[in-house]
Image 1: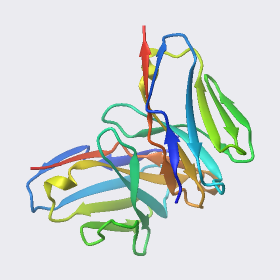
Image 2: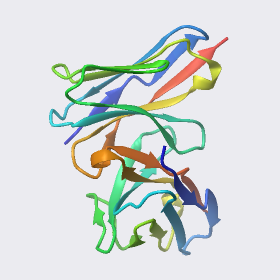
Image 3: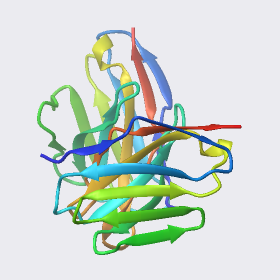
Image 4: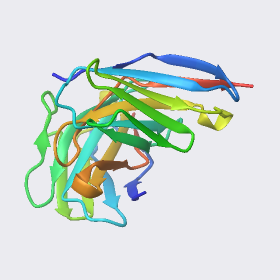
Length: 116
Length: 111
């Protein structure tokens, strides 16, 4: 299947700092990527849809000023957690659709963010 | 809104078949997916089925879809210890693949 690479896989940061997470489609172009958040032993919750060349679309309840998304090229979307707090600690996963009619969604390896 | 539910836990013996069930509420779902997640890892796409299909088989995996009852199942034949993981079903309704995930089923394979 297609490859989506996420970096870093783990990051620990201090409260109040910002953290950038990258999501790259390695062997295909993605005009759309999705960012999910997963709490321990829970399902994935869609945070936002990242659109190449335009503003991201955020789900209800997600603060767009806190979770900045930039989709500057057809292979890269970034999620920046600004002014991080301990409650932002979570597992963040991106996905990118591909295949005929974009039916297949491939996921990155995920990023474990810990805010101390 | 959409709601996708799964049983939380399933335990089987190695070599037996596993059946993981999923129910969803959105009748406009176009594609239904099964993903596997191992501890600390991302999601691996196992298989998916188009909503106008009843069944899809891929090696040890068989997906059954009952669209009338909005019920999806994943059967893993000859379950191995390496199949131990969390399995998520997901449904997609729009182009570009925005997915709604189920709660996940923890599959434990015992020797």
